Length: 432
Image (cartoon, rainbow, N blue to C red; front, side, top):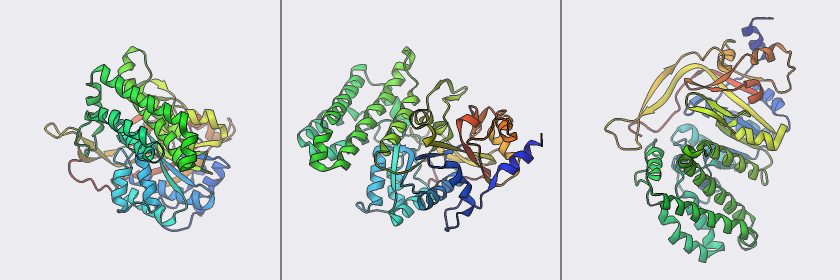
């Protein structure tokens, strides 16, 4: 067998650039061949807040929308908050791309020039729609889905909107007033866990009643305000219900309940499946660990496997779902850590250097070829092909300096490798 570096080097198609400028996409033609007719393609991030992955997200989506009929971009970000982004893209809301990115992209994923450029381009072009897929408030649940539900109920069910406004929304007054920190979810989750059991149960019951009413009356809502409003209400109800399930799982986990994060992945998968009711083809962008077909397992943090977004979509869509990982060799990364005397939920940013990947990882295998930027696909590759045999020796993908355990050849259909990464172009400068 040839040396691994030569096998991988021959399989990696050079990619010209990650930057979205220009209309020359000839180097991405192998990507079009790899995805075939799949309606859902997922592009992973092996680490968040990396410039190359964020720029690549933009360029890949431009290519897929211009040349392969993709009509929607769906991100690992709050669904309810994402409605603000789409209203802005439609021209219904004022403000800058920077303002809407910060308000409408959770986990602070909008606090960077890359996201601003993406949203500006989507508004200018106007040919594709933006969606979030995730629970609200950066994983803290929060009232945003309820606020969006009330906004629509005011049009279609004003009497019940008043009930929700006075009976459900006040239940979220436990949330910290200061929600500007990059780690805001931590104090918000602590505040939820500190609530008395009857108060948590009241939140769950209020959301359940609300979701049941929407499920029962959505055809009536569609007749009153149109299919768009009814569809959005049903998605918001799902977001509120499963967002609450994400929180309650933290309480029930010690009594044999599910892993909280599995609820997030279930919601994101349901969101994608619902998007297929209205979109031709969708690019999903989320962490590698979410999009992989195999269950999530990342010791020592995740020791019990649970179904991922990709696990759900592979089960429901089969070959109609194509996940593509990103990998990297080394580089400088943007991180943050709390200051001992800092405000709760705020962290101090810093950069660090990540060296070579773990030897049995997909990242290490692809880095061995020495290709600065390249795409490799193995969908449908024979089991006895040299590349297949090399891939079958790998046991993980890197997640920063940690590992997500999987068999990459079955977890993904291909990968885009970036040999050297750099920090995102963030607007966060001090304690964020």
